[in-house]
Image (cartoon, rainbow, N blue to C red; front, side, top):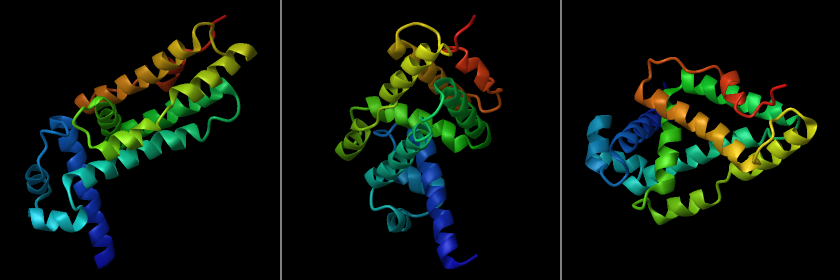
Length: 191
């Protein structure tokens, strides 16, 4: 392994350690010493990778924002198909990558966290997965694949279920993840 690869591996380990601590303890309660100790390094060495706890947190939030952007980039096409694909993709990653489930928890915490840095609040201000979902639900209601009802409430029910499953997977990683179809059934039209 080259020096560059070792450095990148160590950087990812720090991100995973920081994520775990931020999820378990919260942003305000997590100290830089907690992160360095859990990562098995001195604070000085940690600062070679991230100049502050805030910058580490910002990096994690940036990663967390990129996930929904990737999912929403596939919002074109058949409405119900979008939600089926999104749930299937997200649940696959929740099952195979504990990092993903923890990111859902971190992002939810960061959104309501009064102690989150101003840069993080600014980053999160532009995140909106409900509005494009509402448009997709309206399209599905018109073509008869998505049930009738308030589109915003249906979007909230779908994404709230996904969020809840991610949180559950973080708390109980050995419990089975529901089938993605079960969550899609929240919005699917039943005849």
